[in-house]
Length: 217
Image (cartoon, rainbow, N blue to C red; front, side, top):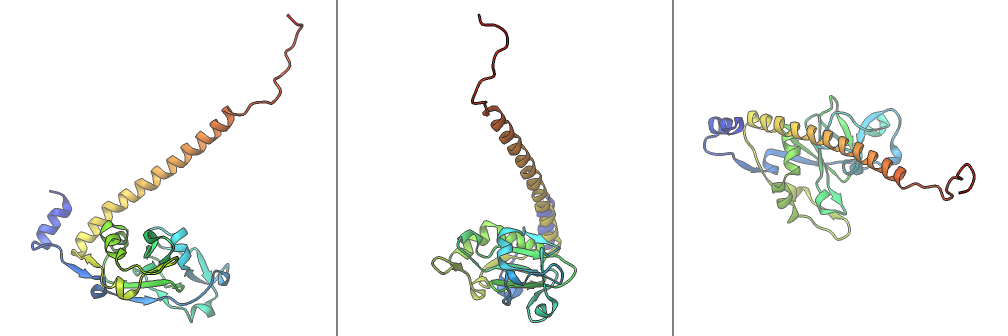
């Protein structure tokens, strides 16, 4: 029996309860600011597009900043909140999320939902990557070219809510695999660069063969 199974048997012998996201947390929309508002220094900020292109399942630092006077008018995520991109042209990327693990608040743009909850932040973020979440959210996605999901719909998605001790153990295991995946990707990238180097070297030939020294035969 695994440690997680032992914990579940001891802490929730009747099974792990499932609840709608709207019952175990609250959703708040971000507020408008543009990438052109980014500054070298200022208040930490996350734009919804960066969730698709830059951030992984969690982050403790923000890539960008906005002026502090602008940040005063922008809604902010608190440490432990989930930051969710609401729109995408790709269904798989709708509701892509990252857990904010920074020490301070972070300003978030529109097309983002802030999910405030009392669960393990990484546990919730991992759940948003799971097949169980993807299958549920699919029925609620709307739009044609730009696909979107509403807070009302996300609130209906069911999430398993085991005791925090179980959540921590699940996160510990998944973190290990996440680290391993990053190492494998780095190794693969190094091998790919090595392959491309030798491929180009092996397939490079002088157009004119070098002259042979000495007399003719």
